[in-house]
Amino acid sequence: MCGIIGIVGTKPVAERLIESLKRLEYRGYDSAGIAAQVDGKLVRRRAPGKLRELEAVVAADPLIAETGIGHTRWATHGAPTERNAHPHIAGRVAVVHNGIIENFAELKAELIAKGRVFSSDTDTEVVAHLIDEALNDGLDPQAAFKATLDKLRGAYALAVLVGGEREVIMGARNGPPLAVGYGDGEMFIGSDGLALGPFTNRVAYLEDGDYVIIDHNSAKIFDEAGLPAERPIKTLAAASAVMEKGNYRHFMEKEIHDQPEGCQRTIAAYVDTLSDRTAVPGGIDFAKLERIQIVGCGTAYIAGLIGKYLIEQLADLPVDVEIASEFRYREPALNSATLAIAMSQSGETADTLAALRYCQAKGMRSAGVLNTVESTIGREVDVVWPIHCGPEIGVASTKAFTAQVAVLTAVAVAAAHARGKIDGDEEKRLVRVLLEAPRLMAESIKLEEAVKAVAVEVAKARDVLYLGRGPMYPLALEGALKLKEISYIHAEGYAAGELKHGPIALVDEQTPIVILAPFDSYFEKSASNMSEVMARGGQVVFITDPDGERHAPAGARVVVTAPRCDPLIAPLVMSAPIQLLAYYVAVQKGADVDQPRNLAKSVTVE
Ligand code: AGP
Image 1 (cartoon, rainbow, N blue to C red):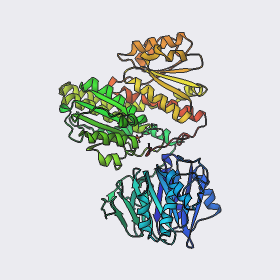
Image 2: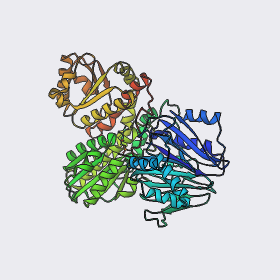
Image 3: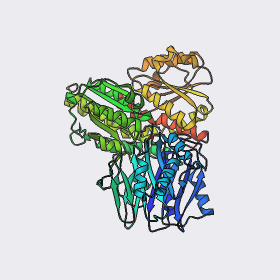
Image 4: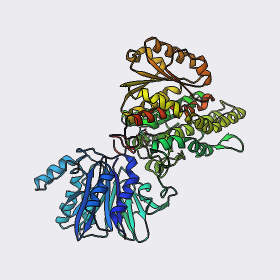
């Protein structure tokens, strides 16, 4: 989704804006631009494509100023061309925007009727024209901004420069996040703490309906009613964290390799290593719960599905998992003895946030399994369960997925003990199993070379099927999602038992079938699915463990043998092979692994 930065600064701004936009690249974008005032006039530089294109434009035609705004655009209204790239300028006003102005068509028609001429196909341009109209009507910039905000319907984070107001930027939030950064004689606004990281780690977050005016030394924040508001200033530990790939070619590759260490941090936060007991923060009384409702999107939703298998099996506690975009509009029946769990790496996913708010309106307590704790969901849930895996930059989620699964695994064990389904000794045994996960995940990553060889073949396929049973079924969904996202190969994940109910019709010599089957209680059934596929000429990539390899029917095209582990942590240990497979297929195809086409890291609009 679009990224925003605004700087009221004391140093050359163009480089700083671009530096900050680079930290927002992970969100996904297809054009970029910056604007500033030069000699009293608003000037902008824009380019379709990546930030290097914008850098080339700026190098050829420098923009000399100390205060300015910048934007990475993820196209919604209008193609990703230069004319649609932000900032949009109308008269004395330059605007960058993240979100969707839902009533832009009617506003645009009114503005055109007043003689306004539009130069883009975007919804955003109406904002610039509305503010400029209000200025022409004699309002001061703040009043013109507020009058405009009152006319907008939809979701927005905005940053606005007004010609003649050289040392001031205005910002507003309704939906997508906007942070205010406090520097030394300089002030900033940006989409998140990472964007502000190079300049400051002192950050306040606007609330929905807020708008802000920043100058060199202050931020004046107003709430929806236009009344002055205080928002707490937090010191962010990770804001200045350097986002480096190290020796890896891509962030995704690095993040796959980061997983054992990341999960170690996660698990350490959810167990007491002295007593080998679970220690889930937040004081949720699992014994009193009647049900858990998990909501999330994409990979976060899939992590929730794995949680369902583990929690129901271990704790005998019913768990519903639903895609947030369906849940929020379905009017599901809920009761207050249900705990809502919002799964989200970013903590900003619009549908997940709306689903959470729906649950809260029903009187339910809520927990958020989050990577970005300082996020909207983080601020709105009753209990934050941080996943502690560090910033995830690759659009395809990897380390956040396993860290989310690790949190839910600890929750499953804690709930099982709290509900009397396991005794203290069994809890200790399971905690020790969980503590082994990082080491076994590291072993699993060593399969990289074997997986790379498989990837060469899979890269030739048009379609790929992933099959699994039990918790390996959601992992099959995740494998298919990863492959689709970054290699653009059509892939589907199925419960292996569904094979005969449809997908078997797809089996032919050209379609690789990835079967995820450690040697667990489901193994025999998965092995017979494998035989059924092979009997029809299907090319099986069998991902198993040493016992599974020994017992597998002969004939799998490739066997990838992950380390043997307790079923509790099999989803964690079996993740790396499917992630590496997607990664190496994408590399083989020369795809843009970290910023796949059309995808955004943080989906802050519906
Ligand atoms: C994962 O690889 C995706 N890019 C995507 O499905 C993601 O998991 C989803 O958009 C949810 O994001 P969130 O975790 O930030 O809420």
